[in-house]
Image 1 (cartoon, rainbow, N blue to C red):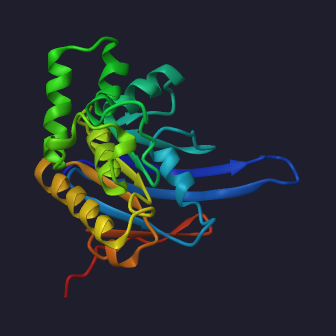
Image 2: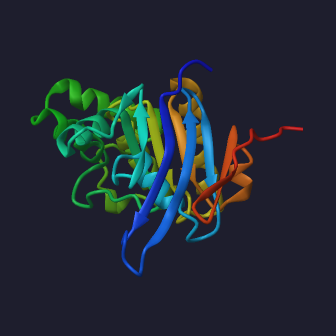
Length: 234
């Protein structure tokens, strides 16, 4: 598999440390993720899945332990450096799409590029057009987000997550608000992009059928990793 693109060493997350209400949400998490992997994270509600995803996505810092992206130890990075690393290395897709309703699909996909560069240009628009075509929305790129179906909106959010060409894409219940047909279509689209681009997908889901289509299922129970075995295809 080569070197991991993302590695967690002895990650712990404790809230209200030293107080009577102290709670350990994550305990001694050791995980590695590789280019081209498609991984599901599962577990009961309150098990620590979302906290784990937030730490992987550099949205939260662990209490102890170290997280490496492409071998770079993120522990010593300040908030600005973390924001820069996150913006260029990690894409996010959430259960709710969080599109800007007054913007078109094209404008929504351009937002990460605009935030990084500061001003729009032809290359930025071309990148957004390419990504919308990749998710099958070339005919809807000038449509307002509010005029699109739930499945279309989630595909726009996927295109937006890919705008900076990240090595890692994190998805928190990305099909949770969709009907079965739309959910299957969005999942198949993520799988195709994973295979074509080599993007590492890490998906939190409660859907056992979709998780069974991943390369590996990591199960979190009471803040600890219970299993992380490859999915059997037999």
